Image: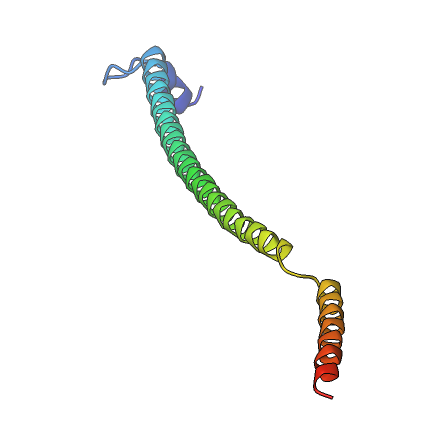
Amino acid sequence: MRASVVRMFMPNPDGWTIDTVLAHLLGLREADIMRVEQRFTEVERSIDRRFLAHQQAMDASLNASQDATEKVATAMDKRFESVNEFRLQLRDASASYITRGEVYALCGTVGAICGLIGGIVGHFFK
């Protein structure tokens, strides 16, 4: 046998055996796995916090947008109410106005009366 193979099966002066090396390596592996899991958990929590913060910001933005929309809608309703009220006042006022046909009829009647009065007055001053 070669010397390296013989040394492998010989007792180690430092106290290392195959079982102790295996146990040591498995312990290192387990510690590494735990570090990776802890890091993963930290990253996951960080992502969750960021997502929650973004979600809260979006909710706040959406609420502000909805509030602004409601305020604009209320302002527009008030504006249209005043415009409609003004239109009703104009319609009521225009309902009491004399129409063009009535003016022409009155002018014709006044003209006829003036003609009769002129005829009567002219009859006295002849």
